[in-house]
Image (cartoon, protein in one colour):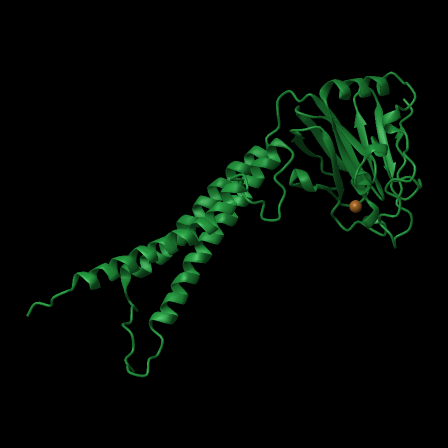
Length: 311
Ligand SMILES: [Cu+2]
């Protein structure tokens, strides 16, 4: 028996379908537009985009991993929610839904897919790790960083040594301290390196294990007794980057701040040659009083002295 559909009913169904389509498009636009208008940038997921070449690679790995985790999380949540709603117990129907145990293709799929995901993450991690640990054959500069209880020492060619004892001098601010904002970025001695060029860091310690950590470089490495760690830093832009010790190394560990000052290459070379020439400490490394005082409250004075080693 054929069922006659009136033109009016067909028209109503068509209107409903188009209304539903418009609603879905509206929801999609509401989700997509803020992302598009926000400059189409990948969110940072509370991490740093990375101020060195190496750090940016790490950021891409980190954000890719988080995006993969979000996609997997959404798929799992949707499947759980769908099965809970679709197969909830109904008054009219007491039957068990169809069961899938011993469904070999399904079990193989949900074993293989996670293994593939882990393998992809593993491969990208190895690639990025190798990039981060790679050292350039001819770096523009080399600095020997020595950690000690409680401070940092930065040694350059020509016997130039910048030492910051973070528990002695009442002034916590080093190079460019006067213009440092926020002042807490400039706590501790300044490790001066050229921006846009590669600097080799040779990391050692005088006593116990310390941690060399620059958050915006997405980089941390132990300074270990009897071990020399070597790595490269290539800051992409001139700037001042907060840094600190991340290994509990004793009473004043919490005061072991330092900062990295990335200068334009010509300015860096001017600074280094003036230090090597035995000129009096440049204005850049004179103390800027006041700025940064008070940070590290509760653990005594937070202080640094930048001194040039006697040559
Ligand atoms: Cu330490």
